[in-house]
Image 1 (tube, rainbow, N blue to C red):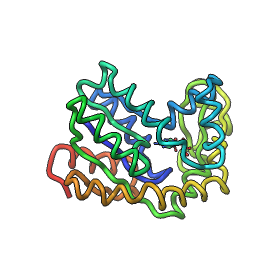
Image 2 (image 1 turned 180 degrees about the vertical axis):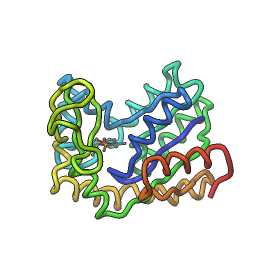
Image 3 (image 1 turned 120 degrees about the vertical axis):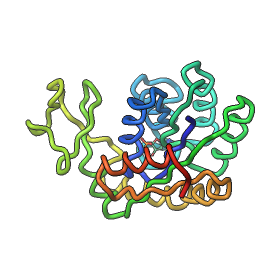
Length: 217
Ligand code: AMP
């Protein structure tokens, strides 16, 4: 099962990807997580990427394509993968098509999650993450029992720099201009399925299950 989760920041790609990892036992490849890891490590790539990420802009195509090309060659991708947050531009999509052709791993489905902008801003601005174990919360929709601390491990919660309101707006504009054209790209390829991401998490999950088991919309 080789899948792309496509959609604006805050549409639920990461949440659904994590549930699919559990269910299907295939890896989630999140370029955002990989880049944040590089920033934390302070590697040269992380230092370069941080300049773009802090402003809500996209990291250059060559950098992310290089990351994904390498990651897809890992053994754990042989039985499938879920791409979360990649591709985000037409050149990235073209590069992915080439890499997958070389590796003889054709894509099965592109799941496009749609959510309106007001809801995205509310979801992203309330998002918090545990500094210790990485568990995610939302101050309104999924608050921790003790404000600012993780229920699971007691670690302190933080807000991603790019989840501050001004940066969120920039990220949404970048999505509209650079990433939304991929919906038509994959529709033309005949592998696009559209999912209403405004629904509750378990309902979206059910819809994904149905689509992966059945036909395309
Ligand atoms: P995410 O966690 O997917 O929202 O990604 C966070 C940030 O990482 C984005 O705002 C970009 O700056 C960068 N990033 C992640 N994936 C990509 C990508 N495929 N292309 C370019 N930049 C990316």
